[in-house]
Image (cartoon, rainbow, N blue to C red; front, side, top):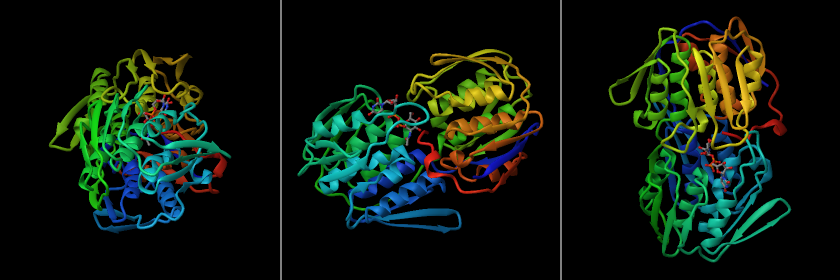
Length: 434
Ligand code: UD1
């Protein structure tokens, strides 16, 4: 297992570039199941979750090719035949988002078998809403031996009202609806930019979708889809993590290649906390801080609210802000795995139910900490960047699931961070969150 060694106390300066969005690339790769033609995706980040999805698609019979021609990295996926429409437990247990293949598989082949994802580090994370929607569209769902099976001759359009807003649930059913017979009306949909990115790809493939990015979507099913080429948009969570890195280290950092319009809630909160954030052209932000940050509360919400995927990173910042910050987690019941580790570094955090009370400013002191899930790892990296001394972060394979070459990117803007390679990660300790 690799470790990070991070010596705190160095302000980040210069320009850091944002990679393509993992959470957009994952459903877009699954969308390739819907056609026998080539789907070419650009700006796919090289992170472990993407490798996992590549393996998943390949295990079903898809051809998946990756190539790099200088500036542009492309992934070509061709699902001409899907000989084995099964998402096996060995893969699903390492990445819960594997359930994204359920809708497209049943829509394209009439049958899908997906291992039940089980619990994960940040809570139960059921997929009941995916299944309920597929049943409404005429799929017969059975569960046996730890697998969910969905079967139908052809899905039919339906009226689906999500009981709760779910991002991958919206994406999964959207991919099912595009090949269903007739019209599907979906209400209380996720409005996340990742849903919009997926809808753009599906539209380029020939799907007929209205309302992506709003809570009501209407899909007119078509009988077949063709291939397409699509560029994945920038990762808003990685961008937000870098903005916090600039602010927390009293740096002067340009976060380039980002989509500014996706970052409204994060920018507003950083400004409230006393950081200066300026727009530079169309796709870059400059974040500056003179070292004084003040407490500001956050409450995680669905988009366009403050993202749950930024809660852990924001908490690291809150430990450095003057006063009491309340951090309320509304999306996942147990997404506070980073609290204990931050406390071990000297943070003053009291946890009660879904709210953490953070008192700052705390002098963080470097120690040996354990990454528990993807965003918790990012929070510990941020804390280590300001801690006194050298921190050792264990189990950074969690970080590698979603951040591309993070240590190289941070080192290039002044962080003292090194990766120490050790033994491979045990399969049983993979994180399922984030
Ligand atoms: C996606 C993101 C993840 C992010 C999360 C919330 C991907 C690959 N992952 O996860 O990074 O943290 O959105 O923004 O895009 N729920 C149910 N039943 C369901 C589905 C969800 O009860 O069938 C609940 C969940 O337990 C959770 C809430 O709905 O409490 C939101 O979860 P959801 O939006 O589905 O998260 P993911 O799509 O898994």
